[in-house]
Image (cartoon, rainbow, N blue to C red; front, side):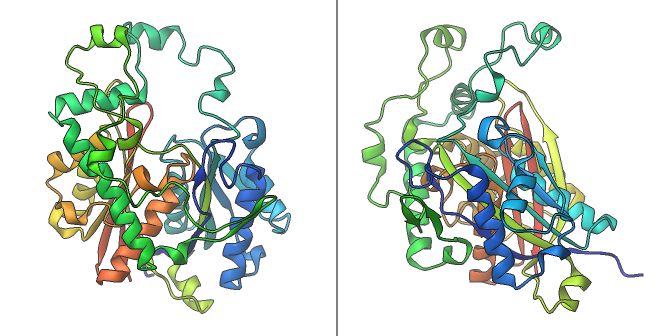
Length: 394
């Protein structure tokens, strides 16, 4: 019997909206936002939704409007038959990527033939840390292991910049590059295929709202450090306070979903697969540095696939903060022109539960535009974790 292979048939996402009250998507309920994407994905592919065996959904802040298994609510809101189940998971920023990984692993294992994997996060409505409800989410045993406490992700980014000797100028240059490349990709129509216009009470949103094509390293240099704290400065005197709102990812609203199938099923249904998801890795790293897990996750993935860094034609490394990507490049030796070539979260935004879908879409677009074969996604995550996923274009 031939080995089963998980393939991506299609992928669709909303525009990324500004994650604030005046953002283009903010008037929508998160369930309705994700439901529009699910419905759009099914309609574009002319697929009977009854064939979908599960809807695996990433969502980080599962409280208030995003509580109670939002994947199930959205599937029902999209008009899926009641027979289609759903599950919602949280692996922090890697949640949608993990949803796709779980879907592909389920297909390879024989648990599914047709599955949708995606994510949703509306940071304008459900802000970060809202699910803590003012309580201690760590507990005494974890605090005993780390008696000096944990730090904000922005401080982790500062610590990474200090450890890898990344100067403010380099961070701002990288951020300006993100906007420049994202604008070029939009102008060339490379990312339009992935974006579904979203209807809201205020009108239809068609474009990512965070992109600033006129920004520059010189403009970004005028921004103040975003996370300066006198007490932290005393505890970590090596920090140079270089991370700003301009060289960090944007707070965003968004949803996205991918249609995955077992290859033989896709062909039997008359679908042309875009790529196979072939290898997976998850890794943990120092929860104080927090955002460096992409380095061991990438190494682990490449070792599993028995590939060197130069065998990968394009990389998507989530731009949570510019130091994350630059430290990853330094440690892996990846060619800079292959890294986030269509821009990243600094320019486009980062709705934390959904971002993995956007990274996958950009990766597919780049491989298809350049006739590339292999692509790698890696995503840093709160708590010092990371996902890495390898795809092969078909």
